[in-house]
Length: 485
Image 1 (cartoon, rainbow, N blue to C red):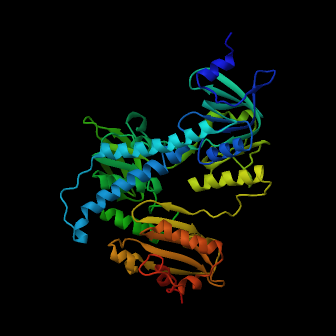
Image 2: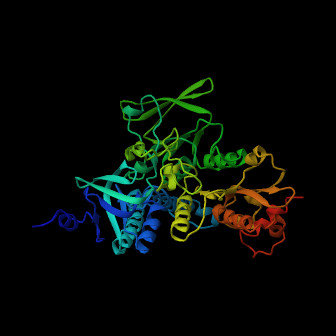
Image 3: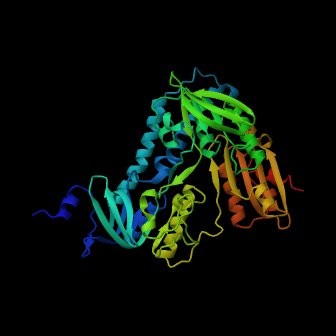
């Protein structure tokens, strides 16, 4: 007689790990990880590698938002858009080319192949790992150490473990906008699945996602209109940085509306999407072929039934954690975007490192005061680390500012990529670098140099007087910090 366990194994629902069942027919593991994001994946492999019987529950694609909806696909598309842009301006370099045409299905195919390569890489590592069981389905808590999984193939399984890790991430947030339910609209995820270019892309939101997609599709050939309710793009950044970003995006033909509310959306008889706008006392309308909503994210916690185990969340649904990533329920931790805070892949990965050090290496790691570097992959990039000028003022710091336009950087001039500026905040008493914003050619890489200096407590004077190879972007630090008297 074929047992139920053997049937599950035959149909590939469980891995090759030995599964222990208790008297209540619950499968017992050492650890359960809900979600395979940039924290859950390496944690699963580490735990299994140490001999922990580990169950990983994933309802969709392996790899989380970064590989499937964020970093990997968007940066693949941005790379294609940059090629199109630089091909069009090849005459600036004395190079003559023919008409530049974008084969968008081929662009998308390249993106899809890269994403699939990453997914398959994770699947292969999971398949090869001992003590690891991958379960495809949606998890919900039914007790303090108990999770029920509604399997994608049908049916359910009940698992128990002393250690449970939540890495379910976030999803694009839907605004409360009159008429939105009656028109087709796109998220950053669904936009990348279009087979043809939008004729005119309307974007709600002037944050990082809106700007990256706006510039990308403008370079592919779409008309782009961006609507931001605040008085500047990139609300977290200093105004001089945001204004410079707006300048070169407008130069590329993107229409930007600031201080503008979208009061209603509707679709006309021709299928065009129409937005009713309000800027101060002025009303206006704008029409486009597609609408992208890019106003932030919401945590994927609704299906988890967190109240069943007393896991506390904030008013938005983000899981509350302490400095060791522990929730209000003993034995349960939250990692990655689902806990709120900076929503970056490298922060999720650092969450994994905190858990690994504390759980497997006997450490006492925390997330307290960790640096939060990030890069906005517009062209040019915006690399940011530490305090902005505004934040330094708010903290009552005594500081000096070093700032130069990229048009003063030799390497930028030589490559005809002079958009942007470099800006650093320096403690007036100690000379330590407090933060920097590099909006310019390879801004993320230059920012990382300043981050390393901050990590090593290197004063700005050391960089001002350092010998860097010429002509590199690094030597721009001589010029930047030479601005400080």
